[in-house]
Length: 187
Image (cartoon, rainbow, N blue to C red; front, side, top):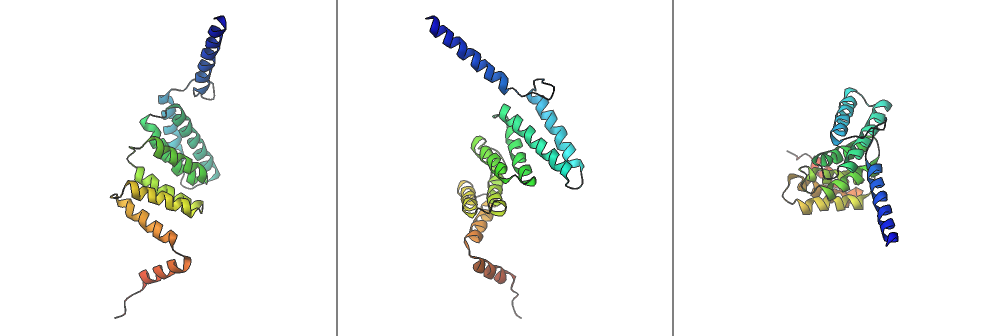
């Protein structure tokens, strides 16, 4: 009986320890509340857009902001702000050249926040990241098809359809298509 009680006590201590370790803290070791994290994010967002041109400093600021988004999302996965932060983190990750991270943020957003108002946009963006940055046309087509299938009446469904058509054409067929589009009728 004492063994069972000891095991239960150890399990309780371990689970409490995990909760404490998962709590987000600032550089000084203070526990950060969700409100404090949102304030930090807002300050970083303001600071990031101050610069007029992209520089190494701005890239570092962007990476720091992505880390803050990630910290908030991990601590508050079902919070309504997490969906918005996932969207922003996906976009910012492309900006700093971390395309795989962008896809991970997009996938998490699609999976965890099915009612997010900008879901069609982020699904189209996923296809674009696969197509333009990762040169993975098969996954791009899958992403575009997912958008078209899930939101067939959305205005972006036509964009997804056109992207699929362009991705499935050979270079020669694509060139012919553009030539036909640009051809001027003879008078």
